[in-house]
Amino acid sequence: MLSYRHSYHAGNHADVVKHLVEVAILEYLKKKDKPFCYHDTHAGAGLYSLQSEHAQKTSEYAGGIGKLFQYQAKNSSLNSYIKLVQQLNPTGTLQFYPGSPVIAKTLLRKDDSIQATELHPTDYPLLAAQFHGRRHCRIEQLDAYAGIRAMLPPLHKRGLVLIDPPYELKTEYQDLIKGLQQAVQRFPQATYAIWYPVIERASIEAVLQAIVDTGIRNQLRIEMCPLPDSEGFGMTGAGMWVINPPFTLAYDMRDALAELAPILSANATWTVQQEVAE
Ligand SMILES: C[S@@+](CC[C@H](N)C(=O)[O-])C[C@H]1O[C@@H](n2cnc3c(N)ncnc32)[C@H](O)[C@@H]1O
Image (cartoon, rainbow, N blue to C red; front, side, top):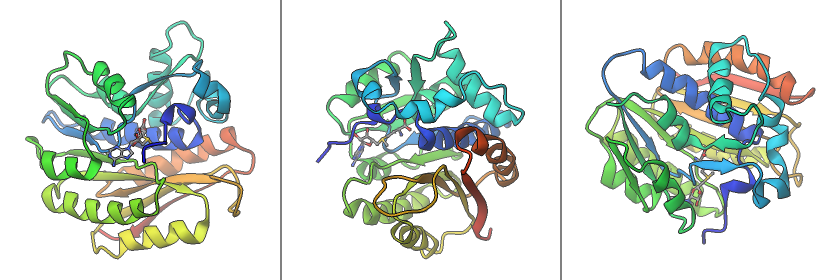
């Protein structure tokens, strides 16, 4: 079943936090001259028109990037993220929003490599078109976890693996734990960033505990909730669970989320917490 389309949700508050963390990690990896690999397991379409019927139907972006587009941030990662979205909208009006692989394409240097998998028959060709002509890239219409087995480890033994499932099926949580273990075994040097929604607190905590229980070292929670926890009201918040984070990330994200949260919602709460030690 592939009913999820990210075009309905692009640029919402959950994307803002996800892509802010992605930008911060990629900027950190670029501090060394040595090339690295960005691997995106659930890549989506790559670039989204916020004027599309899908985006206009939900208007979710208005509660996310819509509140930030003209904002001048003090935190440098938040500033880089907003500037990147501004670059893709040179007229000064918010029309397009980049997905995770296009964010990587924009930030990576020519010798860094990009790998991405996406299964959806409509979104895959849109994604592949974004990478036409780029060297050092491999974009496949493949299951995320088959992609991990087929494409990891990459040539360059440093990098970021972004895991961003739609969580439409209950089985996706088990697939995530198993796939993550396989990925870390194959590519232990990488940083892993796993996106998760907060819909029902007890259920998501059970999944996060299962990640802790894998025994993988060095796990960091980065979470922001515009609304208080509640059941039956949809997604109230979201986070990135980062394994093997850059040593600067926790400090940087505390600073960024303290600035970002009140812009997104007067009642927003956030957490940046080391959950498993190095
Ligand atoms: C949340 S969206 C990705 C958004 C994207 N990472 C971003 O931040 O711009 C999840 C994507 O996973 C795709 N998908 C669902 N199941 C998949 C699977 N088993 N393997 C690969 N992609 C899958 C969906 O079609 C959807 O485009």
